[in-house]
Amino acid sequence: QVRLVESGGGLVQAGGSLRLSCAASMRSFSTYDMGWFRQAPGKEREFVAAISWTGGRTVYGDSVTGRFTIARDNAMNTLYLQMNSLKPEDTAVYYCAAGLIGTRSPKADDEYTYWGQGTQVTVSS
Image (cartoon, rainbow, N blue to C red):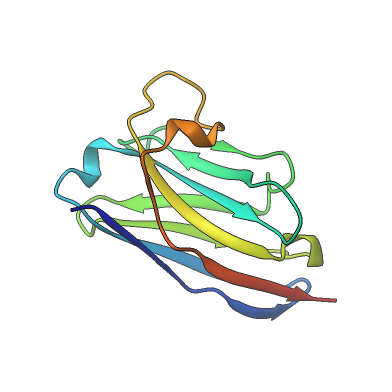
């Protein structure tokens, strides 16, 4: 059974930083491409970042490029999202997801098979 558990969310002032973690309970974590998505109240789920199974390829959403960094530790079955220079518009529930995406675009949420329950990030102005 696959389980993804996000942590590290919280309340932070604008300009601050947070690091999210996603602990994966799955034997094949190192073969899965991983992504972060977010959803704010009343809005559609938005792609944030993705990383290939090797860690060699990363893709970012336009709104977070240059501020967020995605990383993974395959030995620890953990995915990370370092978020710097946070803005109030970054406020959302953040979800990690796993999928076998290959060369297809990692920005589409239907490419992902497994999802975590989400962690709340709130950025105050």
